[in-house]
Image (cartoon, rainbow, N blue to C red):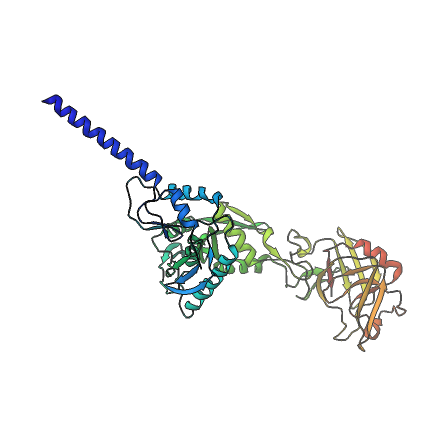
Length: 461
């Protein structure tokens, strides 16, 4: 009795194995019941049978958007050839399931000589249609995390009613090769507050909290916290985005104490008299709010504890990088400079604190249009020889050749030789001066040119 039961169980087991094996072989070699290729039913067919059926089809390709025709090609026969048969074998493997499936699945197969131009036209038609339908519709707004006041919060998503163009184009691409392409429009979906994307944003923003950075400006240190640097921050598409308005107050205080740009300078003249220059001029430096914001937020991200402000300075005029940051002697001017006394019509050239040249000059004519501007400027560049071009007071143009040219203002004022000048008197500038330049006699202009260097301060008073 027991042996008969064993035989029955063994027989049933063998039968099951045969059935499963047979089913597996069938599944591997036949498409599932509701599978279509290029919207042509191939359920139950082998790859070869499906290939023969699809390649024999013909007709116009029609593109529908929500069942409304938007594009139609000319009628033509499918351009499949024997080289494309392997694609049907690959499609068979792609749809394979161990147990038979009734799931409706459409597979797209394009022949090697697929009409790409026709597809591109269809994409344009589809794009125009979706854009037309989106007129007046609102796009959704993604949820996002934000850092503010040492807290990280999440701004919830806002749904919209705008259609998803990229999804529509993807549907078109996935059905390319079919004679009937039906695209179902879906609305754009915002990134949700509980998504992995927003959770990662929260994680990255939480790294900003509680950090401190020491900001070194010349010889003084300023200890700044995250909240003193960052007003608001977000993290999107793998990058931080900062609003550093909170730092502007700190930068303003630092500049008021240390910066030299747009400030008067205390200056001791050749005679020993101490004067205060005008705040005009281009020489000097200040901390840039934007540069400081960038360098300090980068330090927070990178985990650095100290930042040197010398990389964050800015200036104005020809050299916008800022000048004199490392200069503390002589009230920020240093010991190498050019000094011009308009009252004395005299120029003095200093190197390392020593006067290497002293000479008479003729400055700009004493009227509003030609006065040599007072203030602390700097040598922008030097040329030898050069041609000076401009306009005379009567509106006529001039082009004067000079051997030595060292400009210090963007308006065209500089040191140069003036071989055409005959009036070198102390009062020549009152009525017969230059257009603002410092005229020098040809016999000394060359030495002055070589005693000057680019970016060197020029004090005019």
